[in-house]
Figure 1 (spheres, rainbow, N blue to C red):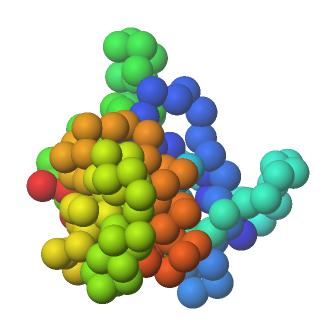
Figure 2: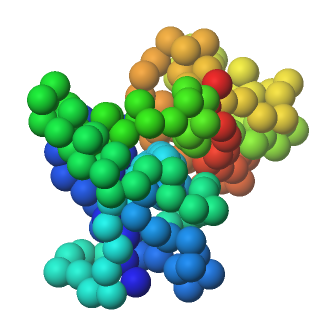
Length: 182
């Protein structure tokens, strides 16, 4: 089975996801589902389900279903469709208004650190002012750190390639930490 999911993002289209067998009884129109979206994990609303799909690219599976039964019915869905058209927003953004703030799920990228290995790599680093050296210096005395926080304290937005190099060497592990939004 497949689900059409809208997210609280400025996209005026639904995205197709595979419904794992264990979620099929709960994957109903009007329930919230947690699904991968690019590099993040987001909460969206299932607005339709079907046995077949015309989508040809790889379809990712839903990670979780948050509700036991639909929290919006067909009549309310039609209202939110009208609301999104009237205010020129996406259906997902309009549906965000249907649930209390803080009840959706988002992911934050977390870095798990082998601090001893990072210390060894830092000691081997020739240019102590390089981006890699700055990253290693921050990682030495930690066991984990939020990737966005690391970007902020390093003062660089793009540290992806440096982190991937450290990951390949085994100094760090990068995980998506899924949590309720505050």
